[in-house]
Image 1 (cartoon, one colour):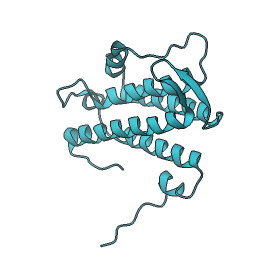
Image 2 (cartoon, helix red, strand yellow):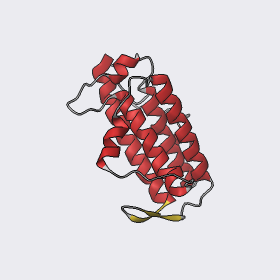
Image 3 (tube, helix red, strand yellow):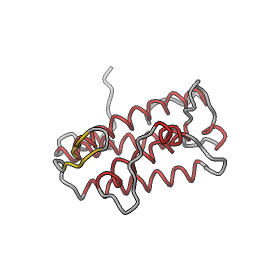
Image 4 (cartoon, rainbow, N blue to C red):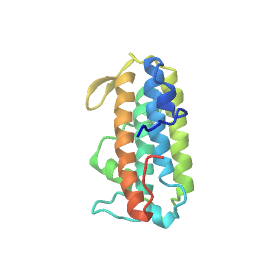
Amino acid sequence: MEQTIDPTLGPVLARTGDERAVLTSFLDFHRAVLLRKLRGLSDADARRRLVPSATTLAGLVKHLTLVERNWFPTLLAPEPGDVYLTSEEDAVASFTLSDQETIVGLTEAYERACARSRAVAASIDLDHVVPHPQLGEVSLRWILVHMIEETARHAGHADILRELTDGEAGAL
């Protein structure tokens, strides 16, 4: 039985594109998968802890919002006062939700962070290298590959959490 692949998916559309088109389409695909995992859920469901760690669907979106800000604007196009976050406390806080945070607010913040990341990345050559506080130096190319890995890994976590929440499964 032959299976077809949706020809409108970004990574499929970019299958013969240049390196930047391939990298950004895969990153955008995984960003969208993450947000699709929240569709139709209540704030309470998105906050529910279903695994021993503090990982929740809403917490994943909050975490990836910080990750987007950290890797793109803060590292590649910092503004006065920007600080690259590296501590264990920062990592824990990035998953921790306040009582006021909602799916709508978290989604909007993530979408804004992704839009800013896209704009920063589009303005820089893939070979552009910047200092990194823990790794020495990194290129935009490396950052894009890392962000594909990071976002895809957390989208996979979100897929499992969504399935545990209401049985919904699948990337799309």
